[in-house]
Length: 253
Image (tube, rainbow, N blue to C red; front, side):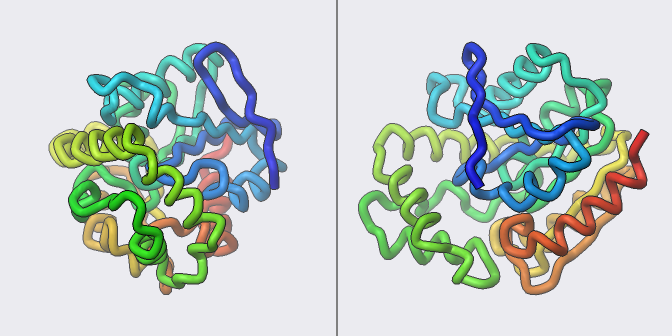
């Protein structure tokens, strides 16, 4: 499904549907493609918003988790959103956590899936190798329980990113920033209802990370999905959407 990317000043974003705002924050690789099933499902009940995070557009000094959270804050202020259901996958979850710790008044619920913020499995170490398609294909497939989810289209998208020297420098900067920004001591400040949806077979942020988030965020609930890796909303969209829908209905106006 193709969505119109709206442009307003420095903000690129998708906004579809009407209702309470459901904002989706993507990770390092793949933005809209990761969320297509989620957007399709929830656009009938919510205003679904996907800001395209400027992963490669900030100067190196601000290519950090906090730099991205500041962009999200400015975007939310610019659009005047309130009472947001904020969902983040991978690095997007980390950005969402930094945002909510600074602006809790704007957020109604928080949903994290495969989020960084407590533990990163060597995100920036050997990764990414430039110019080695087979390596990128294998690394992308590792993200999922079922390697077939790593379609050629998805691998090509990741390969194109990793082939740009500047983009690789920015990815490594963001990965290092994520590792430095461990939020373990601050998570007890999050008071909004929080849902953790995690793949039982996530190799990037393994299940114990979800259990740690659950222990540290006071008003949180945890749902594991079997035979599922780091991006449940892509890999098992039906199960993911059912869990999320039940949670959002419980916390509707």
